[in-house]
Length: 122
Image (cartoon, rainbow, N blue to C red; front, top):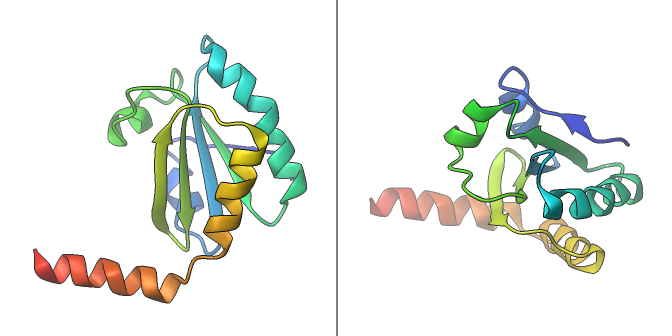
C-alpha cells in the first residue's frame, strides 16, 4: 500500500480508525526526511495492513502546530485511535520494523486501562 497524504481535512478520520496508523511529519527541504522516506515507503509495502501516512509540514502548518512539531522528521503511531508513539528523528529500517512489531504486540485493553487510570488520577 502506498503512503497516504494527510491534511487537516482527513487527519482525524485517518488516525482514529481501527488498526495501526503511522504518520511521518516531514518537509521537502529536510535532509533526514529525504533519507527516511524510502524506509517509510518500504515499510508501507512490507506491511500493507498498516496505514502509512505523511504530513508535509510546510503545506500543513496547522497540523504541525497542533501536534507541537518542532523537529522533523517526527514519527507518530496510532493504534485504534490512541497515540502510542511520538518521537522526532529518522530511523533505520530495522528500527522501524522493531517499532511496528512492538505496536502490533501491544495489549490495547491494558493500554486503555492505563489511560483510564491516569485520567481518574487527575
